[in-house]
Length: 357
Image 1 (cartoon, rainbow, N blue to C red):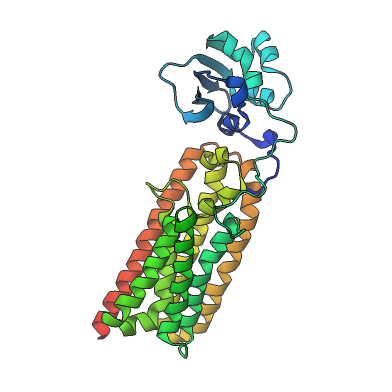
Image 2 (cartoon, rainbow, N blue to C red):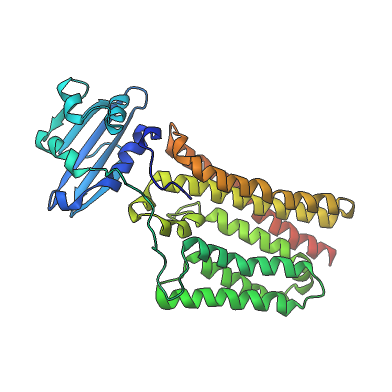
């Protein structure tokens, strides 16, 4: 969840610089231009990337293009200095700091095609999901948390009726799904939440009501962890937090690694927080001597998760990952490990209850 009103281009690496060019693309200048600009970087940050311009849109792609209109061969540090405004692209070319192959006229037009105003910002004021409720993206995520929070807390209070514990979350989740269906479409996360509550209500009494009553809050935490972690895996395009925080930014940023990577990191941390909390809860309930220490530890796990979420999003663009793709892949691997742990915990609960019965 990037939270930078203005982007400091001085902290961007070469990959981020090229990937950010579509954000300052000027479609009115491009007109009906169709072109492919290939960047071959050497030096400290080598890499190959290209931009496709077509139908008034500019998109970023990794790797070499099949038939580039213009190829720019440059040391990464040279292009970063151009992007920082130390000198223009034309001046650097005249000094022989980089070379080109292909359409030289396109090179000349690049300064107009990719113009960054002094007040450039990636944030958008007032953009939100459709509907009469004036709720922005993050507010919808907080609203989605409410039925889960109600479920987790009421299941811990044994005096609360089973049907009250489930009825209120079902109504809250159903409202979100119906409202979003009317005015746009609900996210898969919202549909999955409602489906889980309904499944717990229907199958709990029929199959293993004692299991559900005793372990309902733990099961809820594990399902939450699964939902958060699975959003990091294909075929999902955006991690859970990005589905909501995207409304605060221009749409061009939604596919940018500077937006996706921080959201993946925050989603991964919270997914693991839910799974670890559930695992500690299982140990606490099977070993009463450890109940209170582990319960306190479960609550303390929320502190680093919140601190990480608020601090990381502010520093994400300044980290300058050398290989952002490897970083994203590593986070996906950790999400798979977390998913395996969550599924293992669910299987343990089911089979342990079967043996006890």
